[in-house]
Image (cartoon, rainbow, N blue to C red):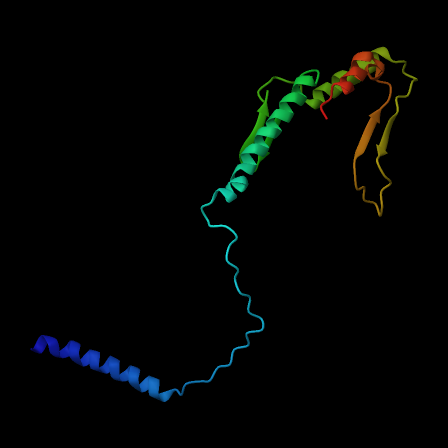
Length: 168
């Protein structure tokens, strides 16, 4: 009997405290303004439905189309090349990423040496900068091209034909 006395007293104290607290605070009358409430709409389709399938397939289909386009472009592009496309940490496309290519700085040195060996030292090669439109407020909205002059390859038939074979 003595074991049950302490839990019974504690239960009685807890209940009486709750009743006293409820009597001490008068109920407040609350008037809610419901003009700003937004009622949630029921979804157009259930969560598991074939109508949601296009959203799930969009990324894999888009990736497959990108890979096809890049493969076609790489197949028609002359010379050595490598390409890596990633989305965050996921590699979307890679082609010849381990190919041993000369770094751009090394190619620039070789090109400069070839030019100095075969071009008259008094000749000036001109590089121009062109754009699709005039910059507004110091900002160019569009494409910018550097057009190098004096490159003998630019006037060859294979170079011109290369642009005819470009995918649309």
